[in-house]
Image (cartoon, rainbow over all chains, first blue to last red; front, side, top):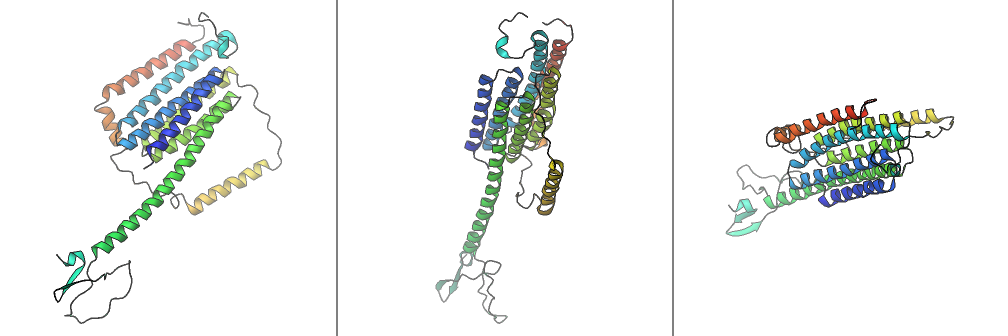
Length: 100
Length: 230
């Protein structure tokens, strides 16, 4: 068995990397990719707890997280497509007004 | 009673006779007459010690292999995630996210979650990342890919390297240095996850399908050419 501390450490590292990506990058697509990294960190933590506690719910939660991530990617990317049709640039700080 | 503890009664004196047969101590048993007193008894203590020690050893090896693989996959995952954040080109970021996802899938396998690992590779690395790559390339925001330098022997070198790696894998096999995972059928297998997902969490399962349906419809409505943005 892999100790829970190792799994949680990896999860925290991934979460930190994703958070740093969200805060430092200006690109909308890269911010989405960083969100996916954070979701993956959550998945790693879920599976680690599931193995450590002998509970199956972590697997189901990961399944749900993956499905929600798929829906989120579809909607988010279509929003990105709309934004690129309006503005030409995908830098996040160029979107200052909600009204397009 | 006495013999089960390795004690052999002899002239009302208990003598500990550590005699045993088997692989532990292959000293030959001395000859004796047919009707003689049998001394070689099963030694539970020694047997237990040997068995315990042996099992500990094999378990330690197993742990070592799994831990090494865990560190390797963690390294790959963290490196891929760092590359996602640090790369300038969004296409390269998405491709490094594929590397990170594969590392996470390996960690899931090590954590006795083969089904989730499969889903991770199929859905995440296969579907979601392809979506990201398509959108990135469609919007043409990736900038120019770095020009590939002309290298004379590049293809040849990579071919030889690939053949070498596949030959090594063929020669030594993965099974020799990766110990077999004894995954119990009741932990993380598709059967148990399915029975959990369709019995206590059935509402959750149905809600996922609704969420996905709404996601698909929303994506179509949002990205439609000339459609009204809500």
